[in-house]
Length: 335
Figure 1: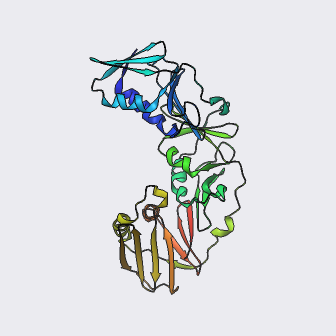
Figure 2: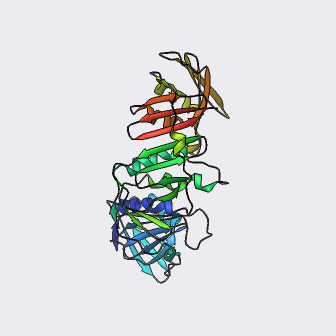
């Protein structure tokens, strides 16, 4: 079987987020080939993508196959199944990788996928925007999830609350999806959604299927926290450029953990960031003096920059600040 190398590598990259870093589940560190698709599974998500030119059934170690293909210079590679291995030929190079012909991934746990239905056009945008307000505290795991309802997506960590309205009704029941999954999901251009038993499924235009476990719990009613009636406030011009400089010392391995501290005192707004290597601080003048003498809050710089790029208004009280834009609201507790 001859297949274009780059096309195969792209298919493997699409399903790689579904691999596990550990062998706690048999074959969870392998690419499984079945029914003209390559599949990965790590108990939280499963991803599959078509590889119709590769008629192989079985599982091969993911790292070895991916690394080998990346070092081959030829445009096409040939695959042959010989007893318990896959033999790969590219020019004068040959290799054999062990093939486990029996696929032992517990894919039956995913169950049947329901009818595919078109997603609201801005569902991905809403999930990406709201994920920065999810909690990292596993003592309340429900708050580490996005709450996707029929009309909006919301998140709350007891200090921040974000709600983003959908431009059409969600065609499935509301669900809770862990933010750890959302970070991968938003890299896919999904156009359809389907329900399952304890799972939710997304499908892209190129027939990639991204399946993920949903969290079974009731999300708290946080609507009252959105009621912030306070002094109007205008963010100063140039804040976006200051945030870019502050990000030098706010970088973290996990983008969701990046924060800057914003302080407002009379007619000045101050941005501060720091890490193990140093710190940054810069002040900006406000166009008008705030009636609140002194406030301070922490926020993700990328998220704040995203809000600045939209038409944004602010309201300020003694204990909360509310940002409002077209179709979305964000409330942050003041420190």
